[in-house]
Length: 225
Image (cartoon, rainbow, N blue to C red; front, side, top):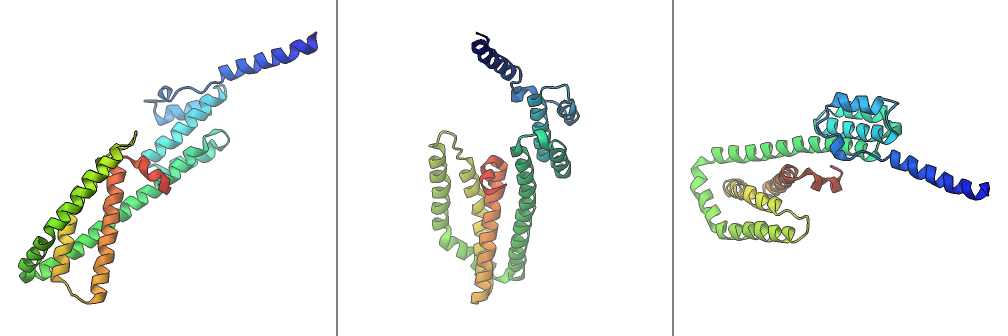
Protein backbone atom coordinates (compact mmCIF):
# COMPACT_ATOMS: atom_id res chain seq x y z
CA UNK A 1 0.00 0.00 0.00
CA UNK A 2 2.79 2.42 0.90
CA UNK A 3 4.37 1.85 -2.50
CA UNK A 4 1.17 3.23 -4.06
CA UNK A 5 0.87 6.15 -1.65
CA UNK A 6 4.49 7.33 -1.84
CA UNK A 7 4.36 8.46 -5.53
CA UNK A 8 1.17 10.40 -4.79
CA UNK A 9 2.78 12.08 -1.78
CA UNK A 10 5.89 12.88 -3.85
CA UNK A 11 3.80 14.53 -6.54
CA UNK A 12 1.85 16.51 -3.94
CA UNK A 13 5.09 17.66 -2.31
CA UNK A 14 6.51 18.69 -5.69
CA UNK A 15 3.38 20.65 -6.59
CA UNK A 16 3.46 22.40 -3.22
CA UNK A 17 7.11 23.30 -3.68
CA UNK A 18 6.44 24.66 -7.16
CA UNK A 19 3.49 26.71 -5.93
CA UNK A 20 5.64 28.09 -3.11
CA UNK A 21 8.44 28.98 -5.48
CA UNK A 22 6.39 30.92 -8.02
CA UNK A 23 8.30 33.94 -9.30
CA UNK A 24 6.87 37.30 -8.17
CA UNK A 25 5.22 39.43 -10.87
CA UNK A 26 7.21 42.28 -12.47
CA UNK A 27 5.14 44.78 -10.49
CA UNK A 28 6.77 43.42 -7.31
CA UNK A 29 10.10 44.97 -8.37
CA UNK A 30 8.65 48.19 -9.80
CA UNK A 31 9.87 51.30 -8.01
CA UNK A 32 12.58 49.50 -6.05
CA UNK A 33 16.02 51.07 -5.93
CA UNK A 34 19.10 49.26 -7.18
CA UNK A 35 20.27 48.79 -3.59
CA UNK A 36 16.97 47.14 -2.67
CA UNK A 37 17.19 44.85 -5.69
CA UNK A 38 20.74 43.88 -4.76
CA UNK A 39 19.65 43.03 -1.21
CA UNK A 40 16.79 40.88 -2.51
CA UNK A 41 19.10 39.12 -4.97
CA UNK A 42 21.80 38.50 -2.35
CA UNK A 43 19.73 37.34 0.62
CA UNK A 44 20.07 33.52 0.80
CA UNK A 45 16.88 33.31 2.86
CA UNK A 46 14.79 34.57 -0.06
CA UNK A 47 13.13 32.23 -2.49
CA UNK A 48 15.36 31.23 -5.41
CA UNK A 49 12.97 32.69 -7.98
CA UNK A 50 12.69 35.92 -6.00
CA UNK A 51 16.47 36.25 -6.00
CA UNK A 52 16.57 35.42 -9.70
CA UNK A 53 13.96 38.05 -10.54
CA UNK A 54 15.69 40.69 -8.44
CA UNK A 55 19.07 39.99 -10.02
CA UNK A 56 17.57 40.10 -13.50
CA UNK A 57 15.79 43.39 -12.78
CA UNK A 58 18.98 44.85 -11.28
CA UNK A 59 21.09 44.11 -14.36
CA UNK A 60 18.44 45.41 -16.76
CA UNK A 61 17.93 48.59 -14.73
CA UNK A 62 21.65 49.32 -14.48
CA UNK A 63 22.05 48.86 -18.23
CA UNK A 64 19.06 51.08 -19.03
CA UNK A 65 20.52 53.79 -16.77
CA UNK A 66 23.80 53.67 -18.69
CA UNK A 67 25.83 52.03 -15.92
CA UNK A 68 27.20 49.34 -18.22
CA UNK A 69 30.21 48.32 -16.13
CA UNK A 70 28.01 47.95 -13.04
CA UNK A 71 25.51 45.91 -15.06
CA UNK A 72 28.26 43.58 -16.29
CA UNK A 73 29.60 43.23 -12.74
CA UNK A 74 26.13 42.40 -11.39
CA UNK A 75 25.60 39.87 -14.18
CA UNK A 76 28.84 38.14 -13.21
CA UNK A 77 28.02 38.33 -9.50
CA UNK A 78 24.64 36.63 -9.92
CA UNK A 79 25.57 34.50 -12.93
CA UNK A 80 24.41 31.29 -11.22
CA UNK A 81 20.87 32.59 -10.69
CA UNK A 82 19.87 35.10 -13.35
CA UNK A 83 17.89 35.15 -16.56
CA UNK A 84 20.48 34.94 -19.40
CA UNK A 85 18.40 37.47 -21.32
CA UNK A 86 19.41 40.13 -18.79
CA UNK A 87 23.09 39.89 -19.73
CA UNK A 88 22.19 39.95 -23.42
CA UNK A 89 20.02 43.01 -22.80
CA UNK A 90 22.91 44.80 -21.09
CA UNK A 91 25.24 44.01 -23.98
CA UNK A 92 22.65 45.17 -26.49
CA UNK A 93 22.06 48.46 -24.69
CA UNK A 94 25.83 49.06 -24.53
CA UNK A 95 26.11 48.49 -28.28
CA UNK A 96 23.09 50.72 -28.89
CA UNK A 97 24.68 53.56 -26.93
CA UNK A 98 27.77 53.31 -29.11
CA UNK A 99 25.70 53.30 -32.29
CA UNK A 100 23.81 56.32 -30.94
CA UNK A 101 27.07 58.27 -30.63
CA UNK A 102 28.16 57.13 -34.10
CA UNK A 103 24.80 58.18 -35.58
CA UNK A 104 25.00 61.65 -34.03
CA UNK A 105 28.60 61.99 -35.18
CA UNK A 106 27.68 60.92 -38.71
CA UNK A 107 24.91 63.50 -38.90
CA UNK A 108 27.16 66.18 -37.46
CA UNK A 109 30.00 65.51 -39.88
CA UNK A 110 27.90 65.15 -43.02
CA UNK A 111 25.71 68.17 -42.31
CA UNK A 112 28.76 70.17 -41.26
CA UNK A 113 30.51 69.45 -44.54
CA UNK A 114 27.34 70.24 -46.46
CA UNK A 115 26.85 73.59 -44.72
CA UNK A 116 30.52 74.52 -45.14
CA UNK A 117 30.23 73.76 -48.85
CA UNK A 118 27.13 75.94 -49.10
CA UNK A 119 28.85 78.79 -47.28
CA UNK A 120 31.92 78.51 -49.51
CA UNK A 121 29.73 78.59 -52.62
CA UNK A 122 27.32 81.27 -51.38
CA UNK A 123 27.30 82.89 -54.79
CA UNK A 124 25.72 79.77 -56.26
CA UNK A 125 22.99 79.46 -53.64
CA UNK A 126 20.38 80.78 -56.02
CA UNK A 127 21.09 77.90 -58.37
CA UNK A 128 21.01 75.50 -55.43
CA UNK A 129 17.56 76.74 -54.46
CA UNK A 130 16.36 76.29 -58.03
CA UNK A 131 17.79 72.75 -58.01
CA UNK A 132 15.72 71.97 -54.93
CA UNK A 133 12.66 73.43 -56.61
CA UNK A 134 13.11 71.11 -59.58
CA UNK A 135 12.80 68.02 -57.40
CA UNK A 136 10.42 69.43 -54.79
CA UNK A 137 7.33 67.63 -56.05
CA UNK A 138 9.12 64.31 -56.40
CA UNK A 139 10.57 64.57 -52.91
CA UNK A 140 7.22 65.58 -51.43
CA UNK A 141 5.42 62.66 -53.06
CA UNK A 142 8.09 60.17 -52.01
CA UNK A 143 8.20 61.33 -48.38
CA UNK A 144 4.42 61.48 -48.12
CA UNK A 145 4.22 57.98 -49.55
CA UNK A 146 6.92 56.69 -47.18
CA UNK A 147 5.35 58.33 -44.14
CA UNK A 148 1.67 57.72 -44.81
CA UNK A 149 1.84 54.36 -46.56
CA UNK A 150 4.53 53.01 -44.22
CA UNK A 151 2.56 54.24 -41.23
CA UNK A 152 -0.63 52.71 -42.54
CA UNK A 153 1.03 49.33 -43.14
CA UNK A 154 2.61 49.40 -39.68
CA UNK A 155 -0.67 50.29 -37.98
CA UNK A 156 -2.42 47.41 -39.73
CA UNK A 157 -0.48 44.98 -37.55
CA UNK A 158 -1.72 44.28 -34.05
CA UNK A 159 1.27 45.82 -32.27
CA UNK A 160 2.38 48.07 -35.11
CA UNK A 161 3.26 51.73 -34.61
CA UNK A 162 3.10 54.22 -37.51
CA UNK A 163 5.09 56.88 -35.64
CA UNK A 164 8.58 55.78 -36.83
CA UNK A 165 7.56 56.16 -40.49
CA UNK A 166 5.92 59.53 -39.93
CA UNK A 167 8.88 60.91 -37.99
CA UNK A 168 11.38 59.50 -40.47
CA UNK A 169 9.62 61.21 -43.37
CA UNK A 170 9.48 64.47 -41.43
CA UNK A 171 13.19 64.45 -40.56
CA UNK A 172 14.21 63.38 -44.05
CA UNK A 173 12.60 66.40 -45.70
CA UNK A 174 15.16 68.99 -44.50
CA UNK A 175 17.94 66.45 -44.98
CA UNK A 176 17.03 65.95 -48.63
CA UNK A 177 16.89 69.72 -49.17
CA UNK A 178 20.35 70.23 -47.67
CA UNK A 179 21.94 67.41 -49.65
CA UNK A 180 20.33 68.51 -52.89
CA UNK A 181 21.65 72.04 -52.39
CA UNK A 182 25.07 70.63 -51.55
CA UNK A 183 25.06 68.61 -54.74
CA UNK A 184 24.07 71.64 -56.81
CA UNK A 185 27.01 73.79 -55.63
CA UNK A 186 29.69 71.09 -55.40
CA UNK A 187 31.99 69.43 -57.88
CA UNK A 188 30.34 67.28 -60.55
CA UNK A 189 33.30 64.91 -60.68
CA UNK A 190 32.40 61.22 -60.22
CA UNK A 191 34.54 60.85 -57.09
CA UNK A 192 32.83 63.85 -55.47
CA UNK A 193 29.40 62.55 -56.38
CA UNK A 194 30.23 59.13 -54.94
CA UNK A 195 31.42 60.77 -51.73
CA UNK A 196 28.21 62.79 -51.42
CA UNK A 197 26.22 59.65 -52.11
CA UNK A 198 27.93 57.76 -49.29
CA UNK A 199 27.38 60.74 -46.99
CA UNK A 200 23.68 60.84 -47.86
CA UNK A 201 23.25 57.11 -47.26
CA UNK A 202 25.10 57.30 -43.94
CA UNK A 203 22.99 60.27 -42.80
CA UNK A 204 19.78 58.50 -43.81
CA UNK A 205 20.69 55.38 -41.83
CA UNK A 206 21.64 57.56 -38.86
CA UNK A 207 18.28 59.35 -38.94
CA UNK A 208 16.42 56.04 -39.21
CA UNK A 209 18.29 54.62 -36.22
CA UNK A 210 17.72 57.69 -34.05
CA UNK A 211 14.01 57.77 -34.89
CA UNK A 212 13.48 54.10 -34.08
CA UNK A 213 15.54 54.39 -30.90
CA UNK A 214 13.42 57.34 -29.79
CA UNK A 215 10.07 55.72 -30.55
CA UNK A 216 10.74 52.24 -29.17
CA UNK A 217 14.23 50.78 -28.65
CA UNK A 218 12.70 47.31 -28.54
CA UNK A 219 12.45 47.46 -32.34
CA UNK A 220 16.27 47.35 -32.44
CA UNK A 221 16.61 44.14 -30.45
CA UNK A 222 16.43 42.09 -33.62
CA UNK A 223 19.67 43.80 -34.71
CA UNK A 224 21.44 42.98 -31.46
CA UNK A 225 20.86 46.47 -30.11
